[in-house]
Image 1 (cartoon, each protein chain N blue to C red):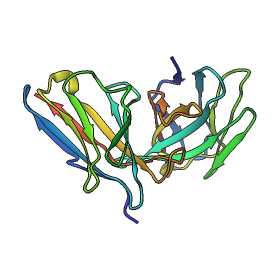
Image 2 (image 1 turned 90 degrees about the vertical axis):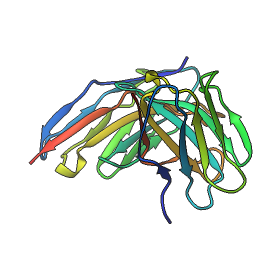
Image 3 (image 1 turned 180 degrees about the vertical axis):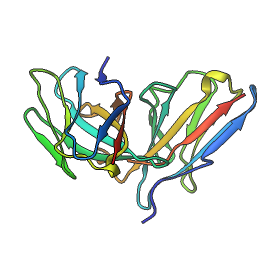
Image 4 (image 1 turned 30 degrees about the horizontal axis):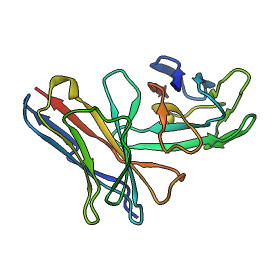
Length: 112
Length: 113
């Protein structure tokens, strides 16, 4: 079945550091890909998405590119802030299905 | 517009008791999804409901678990005769139409003692 693998956490960075959180997937066909973020005590929020190969999703300084050849959707940000501290989830969704398939999540802590 | 509401936020049950988790979708949303997050695992899809209909329950355990989304009122996830392995965070999401973004609630953390 479909699955998502993302890098193990936790990840600890200093403010203004560069962030990469790796995400790879296994799926048939051409799923849509997502990054969700969960701040402490809150529900998951959609951060960005891409629906086809080579699409780049971006939001709040975060970017991820849908790479079909490497089945990857790595999350990047050039300069993290303390307020980016959260758990980040990579997910996929097959066309015609409402079901989201999530990775295990990566906890990011940004220190001042 | 209030977000997706879930209650209770924390629920403690002894083995063998029943757990009822409630989810109030965002206003105007008629599609509800339930996900479960076991310790050290990602969120796993359980069930997708529309008002008064179960559309996809492929992720629901075959026994003890049931879900409903009545015409009026919140969606309910019901777990009968809970066991320790049911301890998890249960997340609800809603969307206004099929294929649209899912908006998540803060989750209910169930602990079975």
